[in-house]
Length: 197
Ligand code: GDP
Image 1 (spheres, protein in one colour):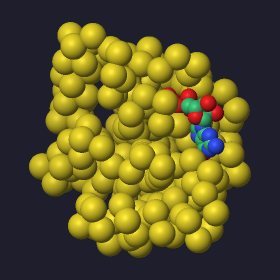
Image 2 (cartoon, rainbow, N blue to C red):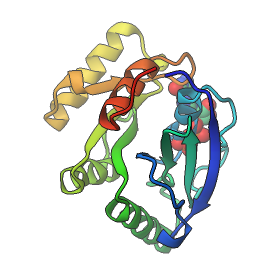
Image 3 (cartoon, protein in one colour):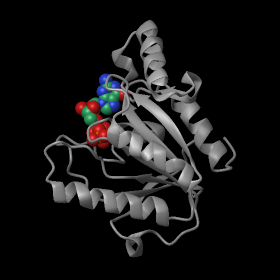
C-alpha cells in the first residue's frame, strides 16, 4: 500500500464523538504494551502518527486516523493492564463494545498479540465477538523479531493448535523491520474492498 496521506482525525469515547464520514474502518485491538501503536505507525510508514506509550494503560480513548482518504484506522484503547482499577477496566469494555457493535462502517478487526505471550483471555473476547459482528478478525502476532525463523514457526504452530486455528491464518509481524506489513495490508484492502496500490 502506497501511503499518500496518514492523518489523525480525532479521539473519542462515545458515538457522538466519532467522525461523521463513510470511510470503511479497520479497528486495532490488543493488550497494553503489545506494540499496537508501533504496528500502526509501521503500517502507515510514519514514526510518530500514534504515540508509542512509555507507561501502559494510559490511552483510554478511541483514536481515528485517515489513510489516503480511502480508509480509517481505528486505534482502540489497550486492554489487560493488570494495575488498572476495576472501574477503568469496565469503562474500557463499554467503550470498545459500544464502538464495535455500534459502528456500521467497521469492516475488519486486527487483534494484535505478542508472539511470546500468545493469545490471552481478553484477546479471546475480541476474537469471539467477530462472528456476531460479521467481520473477520485478523490475528497478528507482533514482536516476531525476538525469535529466530525456526522458533517463529514453532511458536506459531503452538498458538494455532491452542486456538484450534489454521496457522496460515495467523500473521507474523515486526514493527522493527516491517515484517508482515505487505501481507497485513493485503488482508485489510481485501476486507475493505479497496484496490491494493
Ligand atoms: P502499545 O502500548 O500496544 O501501543 O505498544 P507500543 O507500540 O507503545 O510498544 C510497546 C513497547 O514494545 C515499546 O517499547 C516498543 O518499542 C516495543 N515494540 C513494539 N513493537 C515491537 C516489535 O515489533 N519488536 C520489538 N522488538 N519491540 C517492539
